[in-house]
Image (cartoon, rainbow over all chains, first blue to last red; front, side, top):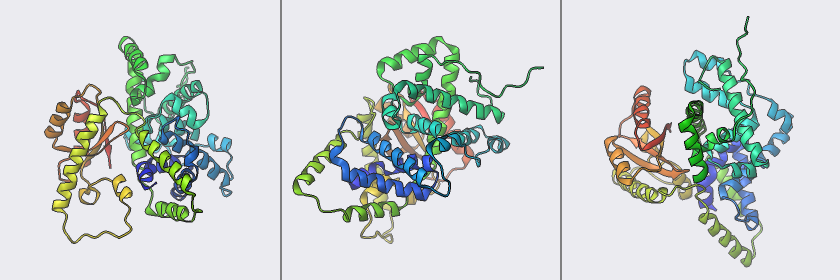
Length: 166
Length: 235
């Protein structure tokens, strides 16, 4: 278990943190995720990569944690509709730093869009694996990422950054 | 008067167009990767979009890498919870060990054909780094008896010594040969300090702290190397 934890805990933490946006909650998440793995190792069917299984559990627990946060009172739909008010692309433009603006805009995407971008780009998951983790059809994965990228382009465009697409 | 449009016009994406992000991440199968390559070669708009996607890809990695790692508290909490779990029956333990063994058979979600040999090189280089660290580390350092070895394994090997030494996450082109990579490492005075996770290697350049501008220039040069498909700054 220590080896498994050592191999995967950082990526599980980062995936969870991007969903819940709270380090304390994300740390609690990884403990819960690996404890579930410990308890349910026998249920692992081996049809997918371990990391895919871990990220699917993390996602489920992150959404549960978001629902539990009474101080915010979010449900999943509400969470999806909210963009991070602290991430102001205009601020990044003032810094004349396109890369930083891009990162800020990535942070400013909705949770659904952040999630699919992280899974594809950072966690390097295939279409099939993202579909398994998020629980949506493969075609929806492709279109969701496309529209996430369009939204990102809109945010950048609104911030005065033109990248040549679309 | 035409208003300035800040909203991206709606249109349906094409099949190939939707695969571009996976192509940038290197997670398409050979057949789809070839289809995308061919489409990019004959469609300048698609090629432009692909360049944009590579930027998104690099910055997403940069953003996630900047998130840091969980504290030891999370690990302590986990293993305390496991210790508090009811004792398992022997047969269950055997089944679990089999499952764990199966995990390790699948630990590499996407390894390119060349990554196995590169992994061996990385291990050798890491072994060299470890040896160097052991040789140079003052004996005044200490370790707690409960220090977790896997936690150390997950951390950069030379974290304490490295300070702000320039580091980058690098993905080598699939056609890169080991000799090419070795030559590149030598020309940049670089060493592999971690990898190949997701097909990317963590490189450290030189032994002296470097300013941001120099690091940016270094990454720019690296990105232009034929055998480098991606280079982003890493911590």
